[in-house]
Image (cartoon, rainbow, N blue to C red; front, side, top):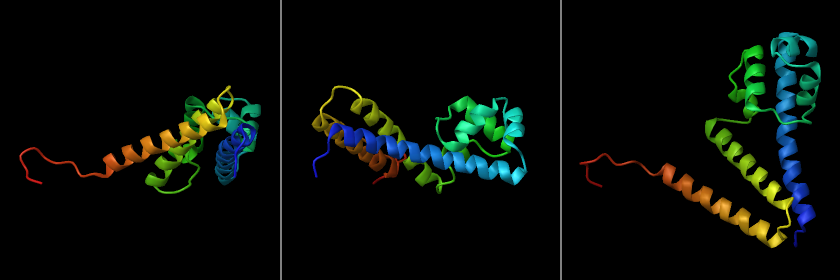
Length: 147
């Protein structure tokens, strides 16, 4: 299958958009558990009803300060909103790295880069991440102990 630049961009954007929708669904779930309206959440999170609405629909990306305000208002750790309860800490970390990689590739896809250059950048990024993961999994040696 040959990927066009347009198809790559659309695929990367769809993956990022899905994370936003999942985060929005989690915000709705938590708000509903408290029995709050969007207006109440907006007041408690020190933001506008429009921002609450857009985040719940997943049409905008939540930034750090906004996420912290929502987490505080909802009484949950900020991590539960950054990862949308998608799994344990290892999965969450991996999902966040994948999302960051997708963002980089999406930005590259929006430039004049060729599909081949985008694919090469993706392969390089994946290989760098694999290498970092492998190094992180290796046990550390204490000085003075044998191997």
